[in-house]
Image (cartoon, one colour):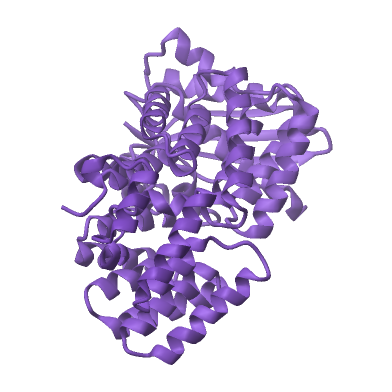
Length: 466
């Protein structure tokens, strides 16, 4: 069975309470996802939130998301009291299986969520093990201020902007200060620092070590928290280059919560780096089933296609992501790189210029554009783009990997290897993809590149293209 939780409607006149309604949506998704994953799949937040303020009917939404049931709800907050209504609808005949209205104090919100989840489980005749009943409330906090700060942290984390990440850190830290035993707040902090490292907004050591500390603290509080195992795995993969340890944590997280979309697509990238593409695509398909209209999932699926060198499929999927949001820069940048590998340089430059504009000249986008200009014979434009990356590096942290990528395109192999070796000294997460990144093919037979692959601890059979 598949279920979608539609965005809870904010009936409060104050727009600043929007985070509370969005937080209720996200937490209900999390609660229901823990019920019985072998019997019930729950559509993830990013796909569900596409239907915020939609005029579409339940039948159309059900068809688009391929779900059997929909949960609708609304929230009205007045001071320290909150009124929550929700109803469970069967898509096939739009019959109401269950409906309830709660008028409680704010500190009862978590209990309401757990009660709703239990009533839905009963309505759907789900068989719950004692451990699954415990999981519904295991990661909760009884501190209202801690919970509110956590909801705000997730709200800003989902913005996926540098300012959003900064505000997310502030709110997760405020949540922890209120309740130092609130495991999910530590997971939130770990997730922020993982992405700050992944997007090269902070040096790897600073970002990933903070992420690891937060994830470990969450696990000290709740060893069965799937999201914490996934966060820990991400850092072991991208920063520690502990391949066996990362896989162990990814698998444990997915066993604990098979509905965890982030766990599926992060594990898929791990598998792609190992060239285990059949398994990688299997997990990307599971992520897509749980989050079908997510920009991130659709883009990451295309990214795995790119790593597997199925450029036609990669281009098609990147374009699909851009149909969802033309300003989604990651899709534009990797669409350009896919075109570049196909020899379609004009299309590559157009896509990369769009990505560069969307990011406001993010160094990764500028570096990819430099490589594309060089391969298209526009050496002066390529040189200017490379100089721009160096200029940015003088103003803020950027990964040396980006300068290596640009240098490869310019045919400057020694310079490229110098930058990649510097990236290795910093333990840049990009280096785990050396074995599958097509842009690195010109370096692949170079002894320094092969030494670099061994340094990243890529298994020998994965250190060069087959």
